[in-house]
Image 1 (cartoon, helix red, strand yellow):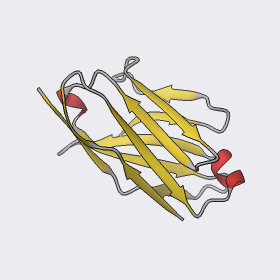
Image 2 (cartoon, helix red, strand yellow; image 1 turned 90 degrees about the vertical axis):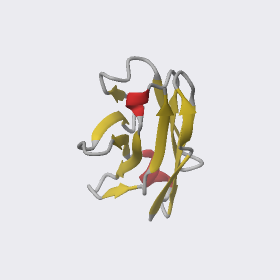
Image 3 (cartoon, rainbow, N blue to C red; image 1 turned 180 degrees about the horizontal axis):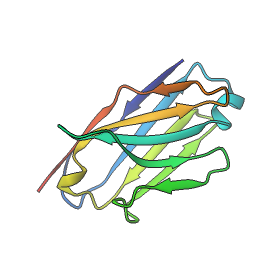
Image 4 (cartoon, rainbow, N blue to C red; image 1 turned 180 degrees about the vertical axis):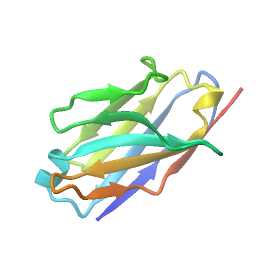
Length: 118
């Protein structure tokens, strides 16, 4: 079981990125019933929740997102996405995907760097 995050990069303030998190080794039922999240960690700071989505596609966004980010998933492709618009320099961080399946097992992706220049 592995999570592979991608899509990070360098972007100017106001720009957009779409992060992807491809899950391998999951059967469809495990992926579709899982709770999934994106976290981020800036240098010298604690990891914080950006947004989560549960098996019913209910979402919970961090206050700092304020309508700029959108989480989605494609169960058939075993992939979690994070669309980020209106990026700000303070969004600069390593972004991690997280999947928690119904037996409580917790999986993390390796992280993808997002850097927003002013």
